[in-house]
Structure formats: C-alpha cells, structure tokens
Length: 333
Image (tube, rainbow, N blue to C red; front, side, top):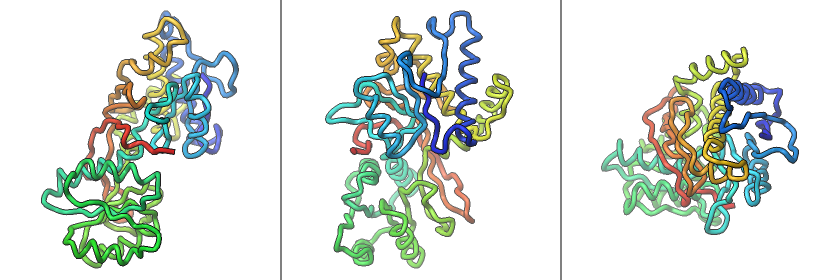
C-alpha cells in the first residue's frame, strides 16, 4: 500500500500520527494466522509496480490530482479525508476512487437539519455566490433539508452585499445562512449582531475568526477530533507500536482507511478485485462511529456532522447528525 503523507510531510505531528495508525493496523493483522484474506499488509512511502492501492492524506488541489491520477484506471485510491475532493466524473463516479469523508454539501445539510429540528417556525435566508463551486453543494444541501422555505439569494458581481441584506431583511427573516467567503461572512455577522439575527455559516472552522461570537457552523472533522473514544484508539496504537500518536484523530483516520481496505480484501479472491471489494466491504470503525461503504458514491454512510456555536472564542457543540453521502452534494470540478 503506497501512502501519501499529509501536507508538511511525514516528519510532522500529523504525518507521524498517520504512520502510527497504519502500523497499528499492520500489527493487528500480522497477529492473525492468515493475515487478511491470506494477505499481509505492507505500507510504503514510495510507489512501485507491486502497490495494489494508494492511500492519500493530501487535501485540496494536490489531493484532487492524486484522485484523478489513479481514480480512472487504478490502482484503488482512498483518501483519508475527501470533503472537497471531486469523486464524480460525468454522470458517474471515478471507478477506483474512494474517500472517508462525506462530500462538501454535508455542511449545508447539517445546518438545514439543525434549523428544521431546533428552530421550528423560524425562517433563514441563504446567501450565496453562484460562481463558487465549493459552496454550491452546501447550498444544495441546505435547500434540500428546507424545501419550500426561502429561495437562495444569489449575490452576483455588481450586487452589493448591503443591498442584498436589505432586500432579504425586508422579507422578514429570523436569520441568515451564509455560503459566502470569510470577509463577506464577517460583514454579515456585524449586520446580524446589530439586528439580533442568527447567522449560520458554511465556512470551515479554520476560516472563522474567533471574534464572530455566536456564529453557527457545521463540521464533520470536529466529530472525529473530539470523539471521546479517541483515547481507546490512542491506547490501541500505543499497545501496537509503543508510541502515543500526537494527533489521535489522524491516527484514527489512518486505522479506519486501512480497515476499509482490509475488509475489502476479505471479500475478493484476487487483488485485482479490490475495487469491487471496496464497494461491498463490511462496516468499520472511525472512533465511535461505525461506517459502511456506499457503493454509489464511493464514500461512507453514517458519518457524524456536528453543529457548533462559537462561544467565548471556542466552538461548543449543539447537536450532531448522522448523514449519508449524496451525489448532489459533491463538488463538481
């Protein structure tokens, strides 16, 4: 198994933690009489002709380049992340590409479910840029959860954000769902704060300023990194390799991806059938989450997505939803 390190390389807390998680899984399978389906796992950092799968912890453009390079003709490539990766091509999915995360649109779905479950009777107006391909899936997810409520207001070139806000406010809303960039979201936060409106945002956690008190966001990574069962993962890794992972969430992701591949190998007679095995593999664990591969999207079902509120500079969880992947929520690159 050829493994691509996270950004920054192997000699980082993230890189070392990923390697610990993989080594722990290797040690676990080596302790069985026949390995996994008669195979023994070997993780390598250089690609060669004997590699039957690629495990990638790269994100963004580099992560997408890896998916495109291997996803069409193989070998199997699995991302330990995948939220912003484009696994879709045309009307189908890249046959050899798989990802642990839900697609980008899950953020909008979680925010929509939050409004539907906990803010009944309140109206939230979505603001979005129609040209932003990364935010569009999140808009789709939000609207899907709240059909027939308020149509999204598309903030296009030449339309001032102030004018858009006044028009939406005139319609009588209780809050704004921002699918805009960080600077526009900060502007909306000031407006909402002055008028006592709730602001939801689809931005990733790292893009939210600690000063935006009260803003609500959704994130699937938070549910992994703050999983109470990560302590069990840490102990399992330590028992196997005598090293405590510096980033337990990264070790858990690595162990989960290796488990997915291992479960797939149990189903096939030959390594050449690994792609089909990945679609039909048994469930596996990511911390406290039990995940099942989805054969249509090549992602995982049952992922937790947390809705969080920024309070005194810290994100505080309000609720969690278990979501399944949907092709309509994919980033189309």
